[in-house]
Amino acid sequence: MLAVISSIPFFLNNNIGLVTLVVGGFAIYLYLKSKKDHKRDAAKLILKEIRYAEQQIRKYKEFMRYSLSDRLLPTNSWNDNIHLFVKDLKETDIDLINGFYAKATYIDIMIRKISDWKTQPKEIMPFTESLPTQQEPSITAQLNPNIKAIKFISFDPMAETQIILKKVSMNIEFIYNTPTVEKLRKISEKNWYHLT
Image (tube, rainbow, N blue to C red; front, top):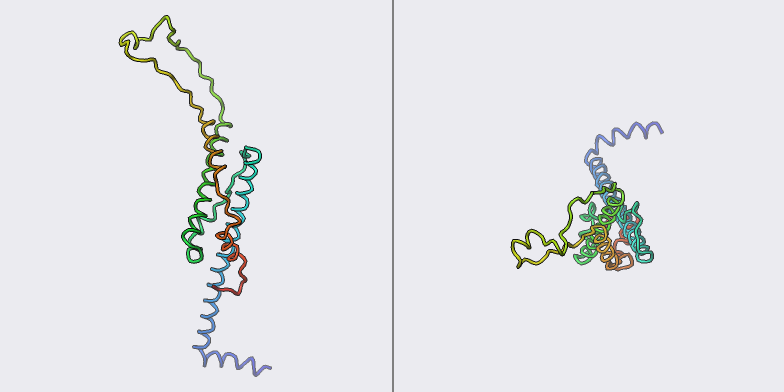
C-alpha cells in the first residue's frame, strides 16, 4: 500500500499533460454546471413570479381591489435574466413575457401611487377668493363681452389612477399556462447532468 502511495507523485510528475487535461476538464465542467444551475434557478423564480402576479390579478378581478401593501412583482427576475433564455425562446415568446412583466410592473406603480396618496397628510386649503356671480360679471367679461365663461373641470388623480389600474388589470393576458411558459418550466426541471 505504501508503494502505491509513494508512486502517485512519480506518476503525476511524469504525466503532467494528462493531469492538466483532467483538471482543466473538471474546471470547465464546473463552470458549465454552475451556469446551467443559475439558468435553471432563474427559470424557477420567473415561474413563481408569473404565478404569484396572476393570482394577485385574479383576486383583483374578483374583489376589484389590490392590497396596497402587496406588489405583483416583489422581484423582477425576468429583466435581470432575460439574456439566459435568448437561445431557448423565440422572439414571440420573449415578447409575450416582456409584455406581461411590463403590465404587472405598471400595475405595481399605480398601486404605489394610490398608497402614497392615501398615506399623505391631507392639507386643507382655505378658499379666500369669491367667484363672480350672475349679477357681478367677471372683469374679463366686462372688458370683452365676447369671451365665454371658463368652466373649471375638477381632476381627481386618485380616481384617474383607479380607472387606469382597472383598465390595465382587466386587459392583462395571463401567460402561466401557455406554451411559452411551458418552455421555461422545462428549463427549470432539467437535471444537474444536463449541460445543454
